Length: 416
Ligand SMILES: Cc1ncc(COP(=O)(O)O)c(C=O)c1O
Ligand SMILES: Nc1c(O)cccc1C(=O)C[C@H](N)C(=O)O
Image 1: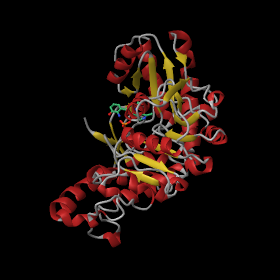
Image 2 (image 1 turned 180 degrees about the vertical axis):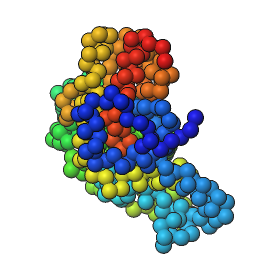
Image 3 (image 1 turned 180 degrees about the horizontal axis):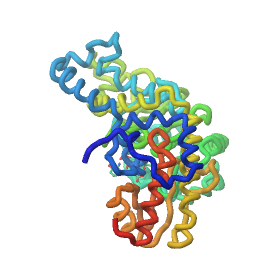
C-alpha cells in the first residue's frame, strides 16, 4: 500500500455544499499535507495511534546513520549549542508538549510509558497527603489507571481505598476523606470530557490533590493545567501527539510540588549530575528528576519531529475545527442511528465532548471489522462501542462525509 499526500484525495462528487464550504474556509487545511496516510483510507483512529508525520522518516534516518552510526557515544553531548545533543532531547520535547497543556517547560518530564508515569504521579501525590486514605476515580477509567492504582496500593500495604464512582458523579463524591483524584479527562469509550478546571478547583477546596490522565486530550484541544491549578498529569506521546508506536509519554508536576514530591523511581538520569556517579540521589531541577533512566533517543526523536506539526497552530482553532468535525459527523449519522439501532454515547454538549464520537451498536465488533475492510478505520471497544476519533490537523469535512458513506454501506450490508 502506498503512503500518499492526502491532499490529492479527490473531493467526493456528492459532497454537500456546506461541507465543501467549511473545508474551503478551514484555517488548518494546509496541515493535512504534513501527514503520510495510506491512499483510500479514512483514518479515524488517531486517538489510539497517530499517523506518520512527514518529517519523521527523514529525522529517524539522520539520527540512525548520522548521530548513532557516525557520532556514536559522542552524540549524547555533541552539538549542544545547536540543540542537537541527546542529553537535552527530553527537555526540548518537554518544552513543546508544555505549550500544548498549559504548563511551563520545567514542569514536564518526557519518557517511559503513560502507565509508568501514572505510577510516579500517584505515588508522589499520595505521599503529599499522608493523612488520608481514599483515591477517588472513575469506575470506567482506562484499565491501566485502575491497575496502576491497585498495584501501588498493594505495594503500600493496601492502606488505600480505591473508590470508583461514575464519572458524572465525581464532584458529588469529593469529601475530606479523599487524598487524590485519579481521573482521565476524556473517557476513552464514550468521549465524555470532564470539567478539568472545575473538578481541580473542587478537589483543592476539599484538600485533595489531582492526577489527570490527558491521553485523549493532549494535542486534541487546548489544555490549561496551570490555569486549572492541576497538581499532576500524564499523557501519551503516540495518540494526538503522533509520536509513533510506543512513543515516550509525559508527566506534569506543578512547580509548587517540585521541592516536596518524592521521586518514587529515583534513577541516575533523574540525578542533578548523573555523571558525578554520586552515592546518594540528589534530584535534578524540575520535573526531569522523575525520569529515572536513559532517554529513548530514537522514539524521542520521532516525537520531537512530529510535534512540529503543532508549530504555529492556534489551539483554539484546533478545538473549533474538532467540534465542527464531530458536530458534522453526529448530524450525518442521525438517520443511520435511527435506521440501524445505533445509540450516540458521546455528549452533544461541546464542553463535555473530547475529539471522538462513539455509538453503542448491535454487533459492533463485526461492524467495525467490515468498516476497516472498507478503509474506514475506527475502533471497537468492549462491550458494544464503535469509536471514531477526529483529528483537526489532518481531517476534513470531506473525510467525515466519506466515513459516513462507508458506515452507511456497511450498515446496509452492501458489499464493497
Ligand atoms: C486513558 C489512557 N491512559 C493510558 C493509556 C496507555 O498507557 P500506556 O502508554 O502505558 O500504554 C491509554 C491508551 O492506551 C489510555 O487511553
Ligand atoms: N496503546 C495501545 C497499544 O499499544 C495497542 C493498541 C491500542 C492502544 C491504545 O492506545 C488504546 C487506547 N488507549 C484506547 O483508548 O483504546
